[in-house]
Amino acid sequence: MFLSLEVSRMTLLRSLAFLLGIAAVLLALRSAIQTFVLPRSARDRLTGMVFLAVRRLFDLRIRWIHSYRDQDRIMAFYAPLSLLVLLPTWLGIILAGYMAMFWSLGAPSWGQAFWLSGSSLFTLGFATADTRSQQILIFSEATIGLILVALLIAYLPTMYGAFSRREAAVTLLEIRAGSPPSAAEMLTRFHRLGILDHLNHQWVQWEQWFADLGESHTSLAALVFFRSPQPEHSWLTAAGTVLDAAALMASTVDVPRDAQAELCIRAGFVALRQIADFFRIPYNPDPHFPQDPISICRQEFDEVYQRFAAEGIPVKPDQEQAWRDFAGWRVNYDTVLLSLALMIHAPYAPWTSDRSPVLPLGQGQPARPIHWAR
Image (tube, rainbow, N blue to C red; front, side):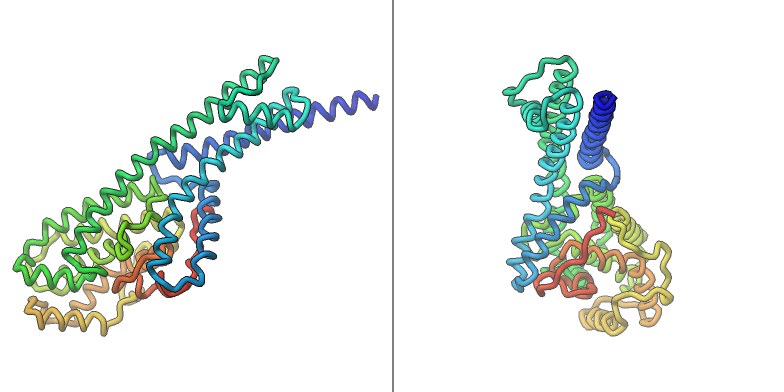
């Protein structure tokens, strides 16, 4: 009787181990598909936990480093390293899952199950099985291991293609808006060149850039943390500069109304909100000024208004109305812009990372934890 109970108990344990093994393998496969294959925004808890764990280590590393360039150099490794850590994480989970399944199908010990699983996953072939069921597991595990490696190899060119498209526009913005980029400087330069009324083409290009940004930085979310080749450049400060420049054109500069500038603003705040939604950054989806304040104070706006007037840029005569109109545009992206600047440790740029809840990168402050894993 006791022997029968022991056999039943062992059978139950092996069955449970098999089910847990399948669950672990499916968890890893689901995470890989959502991260590498699914062509839409989809948060994955396991991927988020990996990125968050690596981020904690990087935050500890840069906590006491006060040089901006040194911090930027270190943070440049964050996203690539996190992606590389994903692969052994998935492989480790699959290894453990198949260990449980090999043991449940008759492997004499956990050590032998590990031997079989490791040989199969990495297609080393030094361990073989006698039973048909274990041979099926060997073939399936080897196939999964090859697929995961192939997915990572195929994923990287897609990601770096999107990265190159993003950075081309960011680099060109330095010519137009200075470094660090400034919306006021951008419009001033266009005025000095006598092409202030020819900005329509710029707004079209940046509208397309924002559309690509919203799609690529949610379906390939690691791109959000890929830093620009130049330490002073950032996709986010570029986005904030263009949005502020378009908002100033629509509200303050006295030129015929250009609907394309307004479309560019809308494309921009929609893209930033899509990224904020992915990382679960809170914001008011329907803000209104002055009920919802913005981070730009009236004095800062007045200084830009007076600078434009001194440069000979035509400004609208009603300065009060111009301020209200500018704030009405800015309120749509103010919160998400500042929150994302804090999350990615954006470099200094006026009206963007210079007013985050903590000091910008280079001031020795830790970043707010990302919310990918929630």
